[in-house]
Structures are given as structure tokens and as C-alpha cells.
Image (cartoon, rainbow, N blue to C red):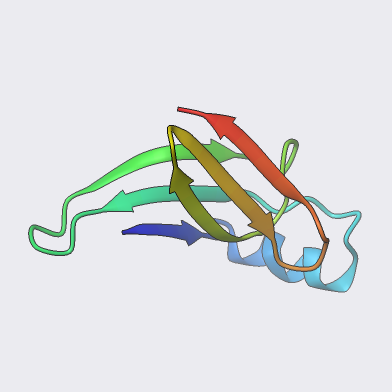
Amino acid sequence: MVVTSHPKKMAFLNHVKSSLNPSPSEIYLLNTETNNKICMFSDYGEKISASSTAIFYKYKLYVSQVFVAFILIIDK
């Protein structure tokens, strides 16, 4: 399972107030049987701000944002 995270809660709340405020994002690959997690992507809001969803498909990670219609595509 791939899950997104907002590691800096206050930065996310500032992003809610204005999309000009960057919000960090982290994407994890989570094994639900063992609860092990691997960080697949981490960004301080420069490439993508406030990630919403992430999908891993054919060696690419597709990450969308909460408020902006934008998808970041990362080769993995």
C-alpha cells in the first residue's frame, strides 16, 4: 500500500491558508502485514506541495496535490 503524509502539520495549515506557502510531503510504501514502511519520496514543498494521493504503477510514482490540479511523476 502506498500512503501520503504531511510531516509538518503547521506548514500544511499555512498551505491551507495560502497555496503560496509550501507544505512538505512524504510518500511511504507500507506493508500492512508487517507494518514495515519504506520512504519512497520526500520533498519540502519544492517539487510538490501538500501531497494528497500517490499511486505506484509501472516503475513510476504518481503524486497528486490537495488543492492544485497537478500530478508529479517520479521514475522509480
